[in-house]
Image 1 (cartoon, rainbow, N blue to C red):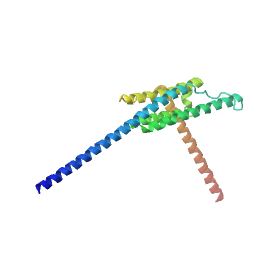
Image 2: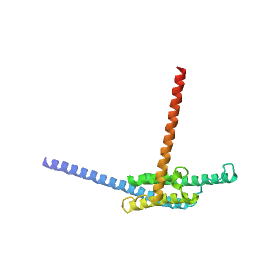
Image 3: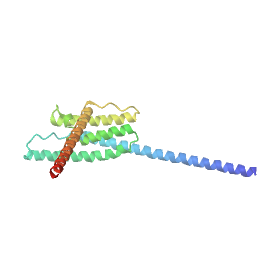
Image 4: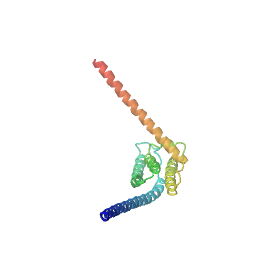
Length: 204
């Protein structure tokens, strides 16, 4: 009887030992997959940020011509072309950022990409006081520089750096633009409610 009990205990210990070994192996495989994804994401961001830095140097200046001129049409077409390439470059970066496990880094890089996407109208207040195309390029380069610095800090396991001047101006501008859009939407909604209230009062 004691031999049977010993055999059962030994079998149970062997089973649980095997399960633990399998669990450790699965955890190691999962960690390896996550690490590989992080490496791919970092490589994608490094490549994309390099392309973006070259692209922002060629950002067109704001329109300074009458809308009905041929020069305006050419300038408008150049802006649309530049903006489309910007979207093509930021799309893979957004996918890569979504893979990052560090929440603070992920949030900061998403914000950086949002700022780049808002370059045309959302960052208007960040451009003021500086010369046209140079102004836009200065702000956009600042956004990218901060994003690159954040990635470097994360790789060195250091805290994320404080935003630079251009990045700070861009954030403030976009927040102000959003507040203005919300105010306009609220005013329009209030106007509609008043019109409806007056309409019901007239019918009564």
